[in-house]
Length: 253
Image (cartoon, rainbow, N blue to C red; front, side):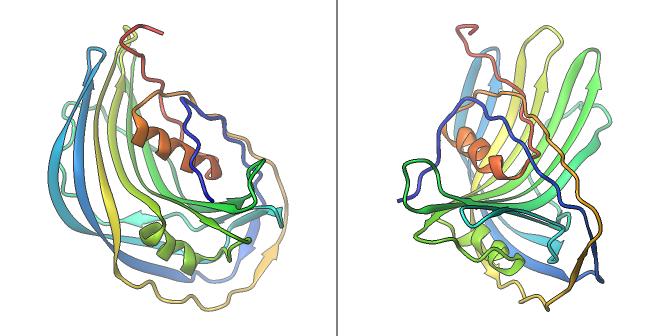
């Protein structure tokens, strides 16, 4: 049995193992994205509607493991920073100049307390941020996946790329959000399904020489969203990076 924990927010910590790598060993895979819903949040209210759009999305990343830590009960791998093809969706207008704050591809497999099965979570994400007039702007994009295994699954770049499109829970997410200087919140988000359009090539074995170790912890800010966005947040716990802003509720809590 596998589960995705529903929660209003998460705290993420990452342990980074720095490594010198051999020559790049790229993987490229094409997914089919089918957008199912568009949601807008403004004035304390969220409005969602059906939104139909389909397009191919190409993911490219270095298959070598850049970071790995954990044990036989909890393992995390990071791969080379991902790049994606253009996303043909209407976006929020009048954003300030945006700066990329992180770009990552990684996965985690672990056993939660009380469970006998392993939960595997994977994500490939990009975030840009900007500011103007005391308001904070965020552009978030990612592919997220989660599923259960009776034993520790094999974590490598090839199975990671496939898992993003074949896991029991898998989702495309794109969000333009603004934390207003007056405490308000605005968002335009898209949710969609992910399927595999072309198989990622099996990477060649590559040696990894460990040179130094370090610790890095990144906290995320809380953001209360609907059920699907909270699932996204849970899958991001393995990634040590995504920091979604907190959404105020209509009651002001």
